[in-house]
Image (tube, rainbow, N blue to C red; front, side, top):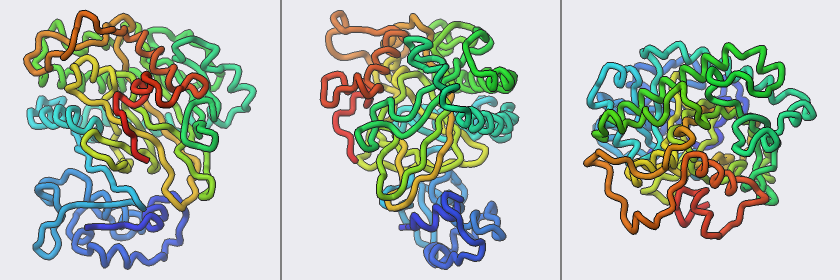
Length: 423
């Protein structure tokens, strides 16, 4: 058992400030060998010590941590790293470079993660897309400038008024269902169309026009990265070429892909709530970028929420309902939320994601031609099948506070068919 106190983790990662002379003896006494034996630990920085302790216990380092265990004094111990009350998620890391080079083991691990966890880290380093890391930092800068605009200017681009499918525009704090006082959400968001090169004429503030080249680079590069994942999954699922997933997600075809910028507002310890309600993503794949902790996942095999820690040079990718529907439940979307750490103030938190979705008229039902995708149970003839466009509208009906009906038959749409959601 490796336990890292919430206070120590938060201070070490900059979530709250700390004097650089702050002693780290509690961590060193907990697992001194783990720190000393790992070559990537920078011993001159306070931050690196504690981050390394946590990272070492949940990263994939087969040569040093065989069989998902840590070794101290010659003994093998199961890993259980916690931040406060919640464990840290033990997610796989998929190397994008490996998928590019046709690495079979990497492809197998991607399929396993998509089937069992629904979430994984994507290592962008040493790949043809490594330059994307710099673009990501530019996107964080643009996001902060955008949310700092005057509220009246942001509301000129109200996402609910610019289109029924909510593919462009601003959402103020409190409009969605959530876990903050009054069952509202605790974040602002700004949605940007994902197919900017297909339709560059979307309404936007001048700030976004000024940074349109960066947005175009980010969206087109991210789409190609996600299509590499879809190509690998199609091959692993033994889908025929004409039925491959990439055919439903063509870069130049109109689809409801979006970039969503998020700003979570600060919360004092005595007013804590979950700023984003537990939900599954409605699309096919989501690729997320964040600097600070807060994301929690609830995997299908677990009854415990677990934190997903950001990692430099990596993105966090999750399976959405779209791939679950297209594979008759074989690939699993995973419930997730953003949560404060109990007893600590939640500071402002920024993140953003590209959400890849199937083309508008794709029927969201099991693909044919694969012996691996299971046959759908029940009466297929009477089953209601949504198009990608229809599914989008249905999901958003459960997200908005005024249309959400807790405990109704339709609430499964929000939670990916999971009936009970633990606190």
